[in-house]
Length: 249
Image 1 (tube, rainbow, N blue to C red):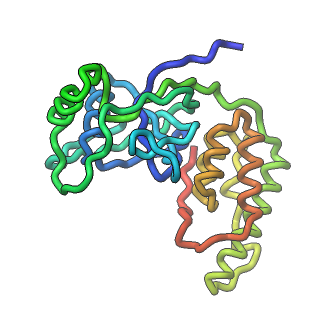
Image 2 (image 1 turned 135 degrees about the vertical axis):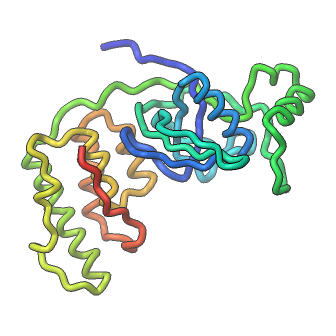
Image 3 (image 1 turned 90 degrees about the vertical axis):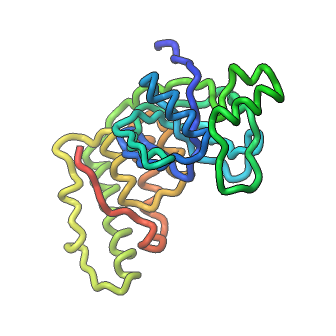
């Protein structure tokens, strides 16, 4: 087995889980994330996206969960004083150690100081801040590529559970539905499902942050499928929480 790669990665905690291959549109206005995007874009390096922890913090900033996914740039545009970017999930990682930012959050105010002003403030308080950043960083271990395969019979069973789940969901919306109206044929690939196909399938189910964290950390295709199967056998939520758009591989 190869030795896991370890490196320092900028971390962007969000209220969502990014999976490999998934698009990530962002509008950047906070100085710390402007600094992060400038650093990454100029150096052509990725940044890490993690689900933000609801109860833990790092110097007042929301702390990331342990597992995340790196993001690479597709597009970056300036919108006045803000940045609009489109990134895409690339590679999974595990956080080994958090590197705190140099400043705590500012309280109040609608106008943000510039990155230079904040760094000057941090250095005035502690000279060692000159080597730090306004954003959270972490020492991360890159996870190995997802392995294994999923037998077609297993995939069909999951699709059957998803069909039942969809019928219950649509019925709850007051729409008459028959099993034949929920066509799973388009979701059945010619070959055994890959990890990327299963990642894409999560858009059609009500996976919450905990579910997606389990999917993100899964090391095998079967482990991903197991989480999906558990989710689609739960009672469906409000239909407005779902995204029914599936992308083909």
